[in-house]
Image (cartoon, helix red, strand yellow):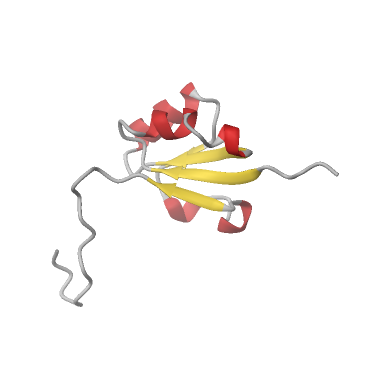
Length: 89
């Protein structure tokens, strides 16, 4: 029986994205399905360079059920703000 490759998406197309795309994932039996970045120019450039669908709006993805995992790549030292209901970081 042939094993199905794990389908993943890269979220964020900054400087580390190339290392994640070309990194350990293929050796682990994974296949990159798409990339997303809030900056459409960055998402398009990375997606086209690697022959991948690209998105700048995560609500427009083909559906989360098409992915087995997401690799979320945010800038180093960029903390996620706590949601205290104020809308402020």
